[in-house]
Figure 1 (cartoon, rainbow, N blue to C red):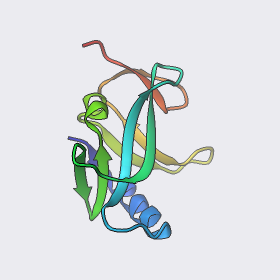
Figure 2: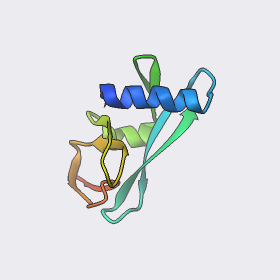
Figure 3: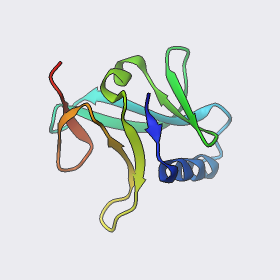
Length: 110
């Protein structure tokens, strides 16, 4: 299970409204090889497929594919506003360490 904070839910609602997306679209969170710590988070507005896990919070969808879910289970997606960088952030308890930019991580040993 992955959770979405109230701040992330509000900002996702605004983003989907601004982009005038159709029903069924949400925030897809992916984990891919790359980044300075070995694995990186990627996010995009997308539609779910039949193999995806979909979590609905306050009417918005968070979409995760099966491979990414292995890395993201029990994570929380937040939206952070800061002077130097604002956006969606992943708080991942499965990460042994995160890089300084916050977009890549090294998973804990199995």
